[in-house]
Amino acid sequence: MITENVVKQATFELLRNAVTVLPRDINEALKKAYETEEEAIPKMQLKNILDNIELAKAGPLPMCQDTGIHIFYVTYGKDMIMKVEEAIKDGLREATKSVPLRPNAVHPLTRNNPGDNTGLKMPYINYRFSDEDFLEIAVMPKGAGSENMSALKMLTPSQGLAGIKEFVLNTMVNAGGKPCPPTIIGMGIGGSADISMKLAKEALLRPVNAPNKDPQIAELEKDLYEAINTLGIGPMGLGGKTTVLGVNIEYAYCHTASLPVAVNIQCWAARRATARIHKDGSIEHITHPKEGEI
Amino acid sequence: MTEFSLSTPLDEAAIRQLNIGDVVYLNGTIFTGRDEVHIHALKLLNEGKDIPVELKDAALFHCGPIMQKEHEKWHLVAAGPTTSSRMNSLEPEFISKFGVRAIIGKGGMSKPTLDVMGDFGCVYLAITGGAALLAAKGIKNVLGVHWLDLGMPEALWVLESQNFGPLIVAMDSHGKSLYEKVRSDTERNMEDVRKILKLD
Image (cartoon, rainbow over the protein chains, first blue to last red):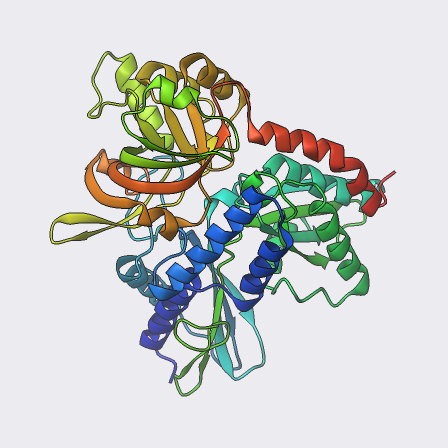
């Protein structure tokens, strides 16, 4: 049975996995980046990153002190609608105490910090539906350094593909070293203002080595990846060949009069974890099949 | 890429010898301070009140650490840098009024801060963002905390460092900034970038 206790336990394990062990695609991309760099400063930055990843795994301890705010994606399988919000909150509170996570969630105006990463609409849970036989939970702990560099532009249709490319370039030049490059760019094209932003974040759930299935979008991903890595911003903005580890794009149809484009940047510590809870209550970790491993 | 091992308190001569691209390891006391510490400390100063620590010749770390309390003693878990540019509007006054000699952070800071660093004798030391456990290895002890009511990330933590680094001198006291250099490189690369994207 899928009980609230199982959801709480899964949430706790997902958070610990996410903040201590990076997904395989990100690890591989960072190692490749280290091999690619030739100059002393960018090579040193990537070596620090790779050493830090090992320390986190060995701990297990959070690789970055900014353990983010917590964005969840809950996908209900067949006949599985149940309230999960309180169980997820409890799992998050437990993880905050014992992983530990930094208490990041504050009131937007008073800046009051309740100390347990929860508050009004936080953690934020996106609900989706599938016809599978399991309940899937994905978590993306999102740090502020990269999130603060996010951008939305309501282009006119006549600005088209060129306008999209110009906007992404400007966003990345403006971001420089601030979002902890090498970063991953999540992009949402189309929809509406809010839909494009949501797609940009969802794009970050996809591994960097898995291009969009639409060949035209996949080509744009590849071109932007190559172009941004030619800018020379480099690891931590100190110069070098690796500015992004990947560009992931999702799109939606939009109004004939608009062309929304959203960029959501993810830092190199691109933490995400997914688990499935089966009908018998067993938890199957997808991104992190075994404790401390990927 | 000359390597330096420096100890706090930092005097002007120690700072003036540094140039962009040099590598520094720090020893001694380091204070954390981000948005709220800057706002709070400057407010007290402008009201003629004292702040609880001496920041003259000090190293200020843009960092909101993860701390854990064990047996009534704070223990540092993770301590990477936060994005320094958020403090752009406050840092020139903070450096010149409190006498800070080194800012440790990531992503760099704006021209007014670089100018004050030149006038006063202060440097910006870049530490690898996100590498919070590597950074924590260079912190031997948590000496104290002030203003904990601001929340764990925003409080003013007093840390004892040993061989804290590697830190890259990214903005020096001679008006040079690695970030400016990268920015002009980026502008130069823009022609190739636009060619890849088939933009005009």
